[in-house]
Amino acid sequence: AVAGSTVELGCGAQGDPEPRVQWHKDRGDLPWGRHEVDQEHTLRLYDVTPADTGTYVCTAQSQLGTAAATARLHV
Image (cartoon, rainbow, N blue to C red; front, side):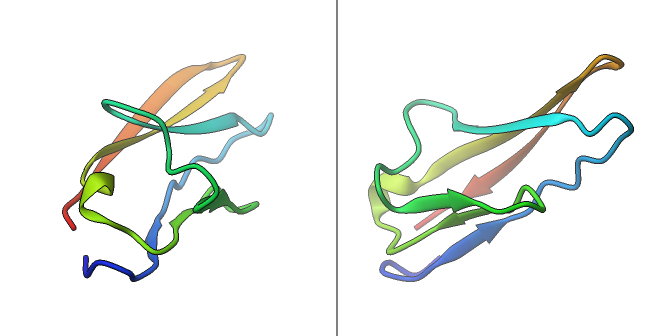
């Protein structure tokens, strides 16, 4: 990704009941004040910097179990 741009990372978690979805970064917190997660569980990172480089993990949890997916971002 280009520094200063907005990046979207999708998480296609679905289920009945609806799973609880959380995003986190492999070695650190999500960028404070520069991210949001919409109702479709898409993570948006605003004004990305090289410090945002890393692996992002989407974890979906419900009564039926837990599933995770990863996405790698390089700025």
